[in-house]
Image (cartoon, rainbow, N blue to C red; front, top):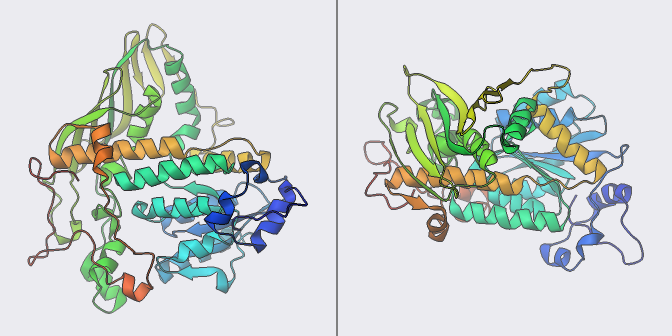
Amino acid sequence: MSNLIVPASGPVTRRSFFSTSTKFAAGAAALSTLPVERFVHGASPGDTIKIALVGMGGRGSGAADQALSTGESVKLVAVADVHKDRMDGSLAQLGSKHKNKVQVKDENKFMGFDAYKKAIAQADLVILATPPGFRPMQFEEAVRQGKHVFMEKPVCVDVAGYKKVIAAAAEAKKKNLKVGVGLQRHHQLGYLETMKRLHDGELGEIQAMRAYWNGNTPWVKTRASLEQQYGRKLTELEYQMRNWYYFVWVCGDHICEQHIHNLDVINWVKRGHPVKARGNGGCETRKGPDYGEIFDHHVVEFTYEDGSVCFSQCRHQLGCWNDVSEHAIGTKGVCNISGHTIRGEKSWRFRDDAKKAKNPYQQEHDDLFAAIRNDTPYNEAEYGANSSMTSVLGRMATYSGKEITWDKALESNLDTMVKGIDQVPWEQAIRLTPPSVPGSDGMYKLAVPGKTTFG
């Protein structure tokens, strides 16, 4: 499904939008000439919502599974990736669980860095789950084509990407597109009830917060093992795409890829983003050529507009104390946000009712698809972008060792994406030079606080 050019003689109904729009494609220029009210993006209960999956790793396959579990009238019709083995494995997994809902013809299996454009064109809703550096360009394209979107977090890894997502989010609202973001705590009953109490003032004036994602390294793919798998030497860009977690242009560092969940909760508490950040970080224990250029720890103080501070930590170091949580301290007590408890003048604990509390990963898809079918406003892109940019701001502060304001960060227009990567054929794209390359010793240069300008 692409942008639909509507004949002047007839309005678009919910049913006709889904049945007709898959037959036509229109450019952004043609789309912009139509009044917003000509786009009706709901779907009646009996309509089939066609899904495209862009990015077929573990999280993408999981998101597609959840999307296909939202109801009977959904089907997967197109997929895109840059790795055939990942595509084949994902389709086999999804097909075994959702036999009648996975209907991807061979001609709708798209490979390459530009494959997302082709897959998006076939569907009503697209799931964007590639490594996050690609998210801004893919979201921008989905909105240009007039598609509903579910995109994984983070939605950007740099300032230029943030600006793209914010602009596309505004355009999505104009077009009445529904946008979900994979920050599932917003759909988790315990968090929802806790946040309501905080916003209702049960903790009093919130003066300080803390957010942790202290754990272990999630995964690493060594160059040697990958080249054994491929049976040949890889180009530098191919290698970084397979081992993407350790390179800023595709991952953003683990403060962006992982710790965003906790920082997003703090932004939710404050109903806004921080105005400045300062901190420190480095790489103390996780060293080697296959660990790329990212830090293994970040410690950041985020200051919000009201002067309150969030003390943030994220760490990937073995043998240390681990904690993934968010807390708030107010004038009337303290709150373990992730534990859904308040101690103070109005002590409270969330009682999990299994009949009410659905898996939040499933709930976020149920909520998105309900908004599409009922044609209700639904756009999580702006807060997803602000929380992603909060993570980027933290990285900029730790890489540089400077105190950086939100406004100053946006002035930098930091852009880490490999230029033109989706504009040339695969064979040319994999020979493009990524922003960071190894030295003669095979090691990548890390940011040096006090010397690195922005990161």
